[in-house]
Length: 49
Figure 1 (cartoon, helix red, strand yellow):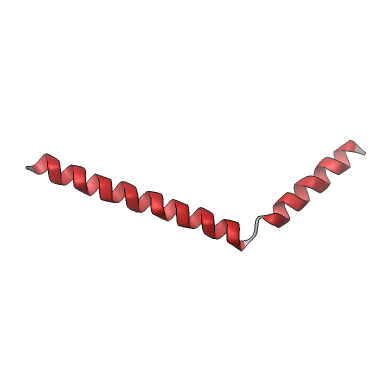
Figure 2: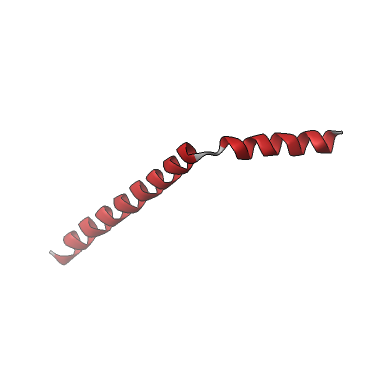
């Protein structure tokens, strides 16, 4: 009975992960990538001079 309840909870959790959560994940990943790229470019600029 407990195992079934655990699996049931897991299934509802998977259902909750929809396009909205996926969009947040992609947006935050892209934001992090852009931030690292900009910081890298700034560091390169300062090291050149």
